[in-house]
Image 1: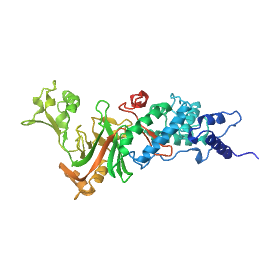
Image 2 (image 1 turned 120 degrees about the vertical axis):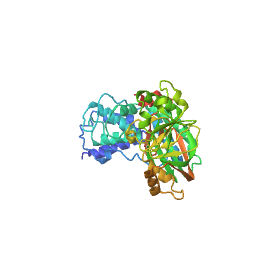
Image 3 (image 1 turned 30 degrees about the horizontal axis):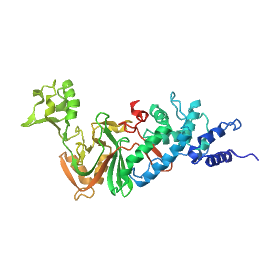
Image 4 (image 1 turned 180 degrees about the horizontal axis):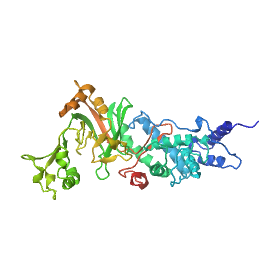
Length: 415
């Protein structure tokens, strides 16, 4: 009796498991089997198990001993791949997506199988079917890319970084992460700079995760440890001297009404200064203080989150909410903008007597600048973790935006 296709595929998985530890990484065995002349012309109607898929999102904090263990497991897996010669390169000249039939899809399938994004049983055909679509989305999610299933330049760039380079990135970040996993408080906020993401953690679980905007390459967000001790509702914004020099003075040269339009006042030793009395062809204005009134145009919008540090860095809201939809969210002058910041503030002030979400929202509507001292300061960590794992072969990589990982190809934002 002829064996069914499903039985044959199960046999492949079993053989791969016996030949090389870790079924997701048995590249050589799979290549021999799938390229055998007698394997037949399989159609593309694989069952649901043909796509390994699986959840990428996790409530496991990056700062946890479990994460360390998972990174060590990932290092073992990527060492195995590197020892076999890395994975194949996927040609990056075409827009591959659902419904496409192209020889390059076979190389894509092979690449996705090796890192466990696509099940081995999916085979090596030229069809970009729904299982490949799911696998590409999983790969994109693990790399902080829009999970749209479409192969573009950033997806190709991330996919074609060699296993050896990824291994080095994991090893670098393992050591980078170790100090953060010792005596971690039960409640804290972690800003991951290369991921442009924030975790609010409580009792070993991520209770909130926020998209962030962090510093530009030439105005980097610093790595620091502190404790959030104050929230200012409807804050005034005091422009740093660097922004005055690099942004405000050039804007005033183009549009003398810029300050008035944006409710920014110039404050000197004797009070407010008329902008028309300043020579904007020079940088004399940099010696004065520029303060923006609270309101809809304020650079920090509704709220500012303060913590002691030597960098004059803070977290805040923004009137430019569309920036959170950008792929490369490295647009600030060093401070961190927080999407859905009101949820984070509500969590921060919950143990502060007299404050809750309702009063917070009412204070925003009042338009009055109101400082709130947090009863129990919450530790905050600005860190640089560009590679980590949450287990089950879910290994995350992010763009090495500040080039701290030691390999140029890890900085895909430079493309």
